Image 1 (cartoon, rainbow, N blue to C red):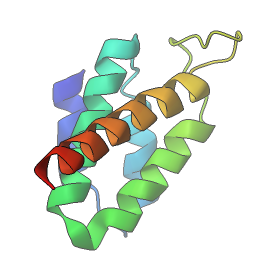
Image 2 (cartoon, rainbow, N blue to C red):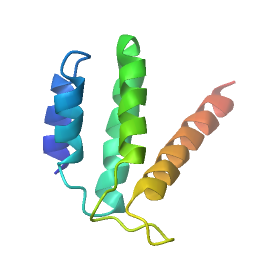
Image 3 (cartoon, one colour):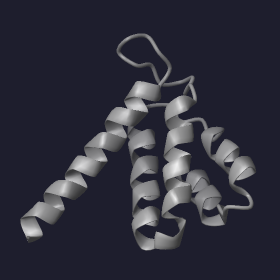
Image 4 (spheres, rainbow, N blue to C red):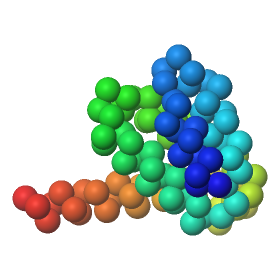
Length: 102
């Protein structure tokens, strides 16, 4: 699952965003762990490929708005809040890393 997600992200460009972002979502994340790993990959790619930062942000928005059928939120929803929570945790981790270096 993660391998397939990486393959899709490696092909992602602005011109292919609609098709490949749908393909990324259709990877079918089955639990929080693979979803967290996918978020880590997205954040890492956004940090390495500054020129595509906005595109990766758009991907995160699309993921947050798309029901993830196999992942239940605490309120009975389908993964949107879980995605946001995992993304926020990753951002917090990055912030804390940067704070330690300063």
